[in-house]
Amino acid sequence: MRLLVALCRELARLGLPSVMSDARPALSVSGGPADPKVWISVSPCGEFYEWCPDPGDRFPATSPECAAERIAGRLRTRH
View 1 (cartoon, one colour):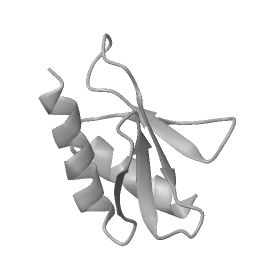
View 2 (view 1 turned 60 degrees about the vertical axis):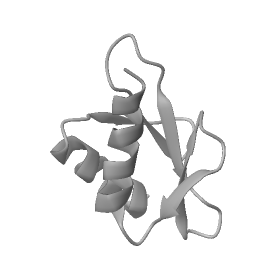
View 3 (view 1 turned 45 degrees about the horizontal axis):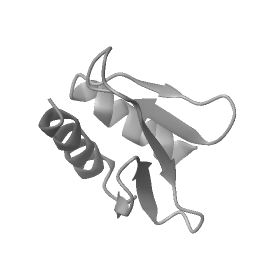
View 4 (view 1 turned 180 degrees about the horizontal axis):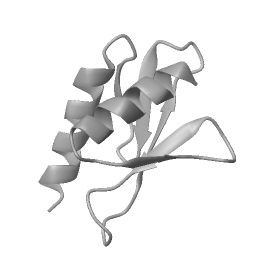
């Protein structure tokens, strides 16, 4: 959970509010009201942030600030 909270903070710093899931350890973020949500979780080993719907997207969990920037970049390219 602490890794997700750190990422949540970094996403908010970039102007992308995220929401923690009640059902599982994950958070969601979208670029705008009409955009599909991107679900982000931490890999079972705790080493990576992983997100959908882009299969294979992952980033080392040691750098939540860089992961947030990559996610923000993905959201911006969808517009």
